[in-house]
Image (tube, rainbow, N blue to C red; front, side, top):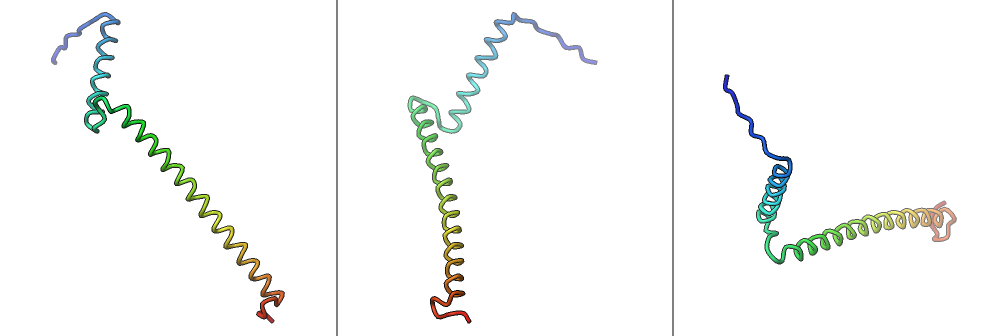
Length: 92
């Protein structure tokens, strides 16, 4: 059986190492998707704006579809009522 040696370091040093590793990982991930450099903050704000606009467009499209369906249903009911009352010369 292999015996492993343990290394101990002070808590502050360990936290500093974790913070540095996290920062490097985040920078590497941003670089991988092309969001590094001086324009990165502007690019992220622009992406958020586009996402907000897309979500607003989805919401508006959904409301428009619901309004069209309700309007069509009301028109069909009115047409049926008019035909039933022989206002257009239809029905018997």
